[in-house]
Amino acid sequence: MAPSAPSPKIAGQATKHPALVMLRGALVAALVVGVNAAAVSTVAAGVPGLLGALLGLLTVVVFSGAGLLALHLSRKTSPTMQLAVAMASYTGRIAIFGGLLALALNSDGLARHVNLTVLGLVAMVVVMGWMAGEIWAWSRLRVPIYDLDKEVTA
Image (cartoon, rainbow, N blue to C red):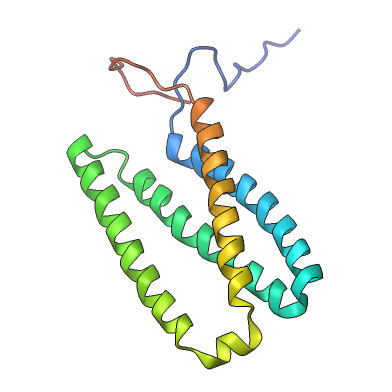
C-alpha cells in the first residue's frame, strides 16, 4: 500500500490567509443575498429594479472586497502598517463612494434607467449579508492567540 500524502488541513494549524477566507465567506453570502434581492426587485420594479439591484450588489462587492484585499496585501507588514493600510483603505473607499454617490444623484441618465430606491435598499441588504458572511468566516478561522515560533505552512 502506497503512503498517502499528508492532509493539507491539519488539526490545530493556523489559517495562513485569513483575509482571503473572510473574503470568500463574505462574497458567497453577498452573492446569495444579492441574487435573491435582484429577483425580488425585478418582479417588483421591472428592468430598472433589476439594474438597481445589480448596481447595488456590484458596489458593495467592489468596495467591501477592496478593503479585505488591502488587508491581505499588507499581511506581511507590521501591525502598525496594517492599521495604517486599513485606515487609508477605508478613508479612500469612503471618499470614492461619496464622489460616485454625488455623481449618481446628479445624473438624469442614471435615474431614467435605474431604480435608485432599489439600488439603495439592495445595497443595504447586501452589506448586511456581506457582514454576516464575513463574521461567519471569521468565527471559523484558526487564529493563534500567541506568536508562533515559525512561519505557518498551509
